[in-house]
Image (cartoon, rainbow over all chains, first blue to last red; front, side):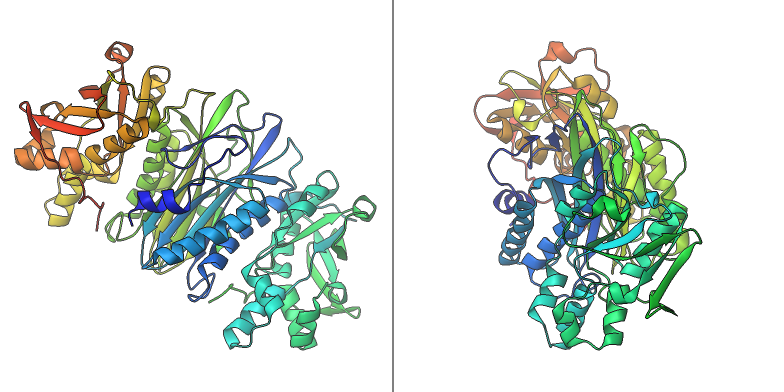
Length: 306
Length: 306
């Protein structure tokens, strides 16, 4: 199966897509941006054996590659429009490519992003790079750098599930809910959109809450304090892990692809699915408390799957 | 050196860039497109050991990764604006990353494209994916599908040099000019821009003239005939290779990143650096003639470096 056939068969779908004058199949895609908007550009790579175990299903790899990029779009307060794919195949069968394509379009259809171009190459391992272009009202993008002293710190969803799911998968004791949280992250596009004009700063949690929140606070030139008891945890996480493990996973487990943001409490009181976990302070650094006591957090260790 | 430091040190340059509200360092870049334009999106991956020999210098790998994408932008008649980079490093040293960065910005500065985001990961081999967003006047993008019966067929520059340069590099008998043609392709942005409104179709020559011209003719639903004696060849190619080798390299050697386009002769008579090599015909397929005789061309074999 040569590259041309491969693309035509699995990645070139008929049908008009909004803003796409020319899609897959020419030297480049021709796109018509919305004139009243700014664009958000994101890019993320998943490497076999680094970001996912080699036996991960093709459909899940593809879904995840799209979802992690969508999560960056969500963290900027944007909605997704167009996507490109660079796929390096190893000895992948046509069946593998077909499954990959179906997972890719599952995510693309669910979040309304059009695949407009790509490149397939061969190499020793599977490597997937996805880029997404989103749009957001001019001047309204949510940045890491806007946190204000006095803001509350919020997160979406529940924390630690993805790292927990991966851990159980690797131990051969998978939990269905937690595994899905790792394999099929749910990018918070709807929440991100709702935060535009309301949140002062945002980041997506890909490397663990503690590390990513620190990046946000540093970019904003402020500090913060969070209450570990307030971290939202799933039933499954509570059932399968000890309290200490729960804390470590929720603070430092990666791959959750939830949002962490800061805002005045009043501004976001009507937004569902969010939890206040702390506050932005003037003195720099992140302080984590449990039952009022300061807890030292080692967030240096998380390196996704490896 | 962690990812954060690496990006800040080698890929995040200070200074305002046109249309870039937020560049490297947030979850995504924030860009302000030109409202009167359409956008061109391209993506291309270079895999170590597939697209370049493992001992290729880091600066050349980076330059080439940018240049091959710019060539797609040129083939669409667009000018480049923004670029993202997904870089998978193996056991690359900081020195290697520094050299890579310098090659990347050599190309970026020369062709005025701004690096606005990226992702660095680790893997068993170096893999480089670059995406470029370009702009072109609305409705004016040069497509593969616009060739008209009666158009002349043109190419830019000289053909076969890159494959010749690679061949000599691999044989340990490098030719400076030809090696540079492989390592540092010259994307034809200026010519591509000059062709807007004048050429009827265009493609860039990445897999060899014969194969790429066939793609253009097929996309246009027409055929074509070229005269091998008219293919523009460099002095160096003529000196180092036999006439039969010259023909094979010029027709089927990949990696030239010249443009092949079709246009009425009159429309492009003032454009420098182009050569008419044939004509578009009604009957499908590509016919190659030499001294008036039809020559069978085997263009199935070219697989870049491997």
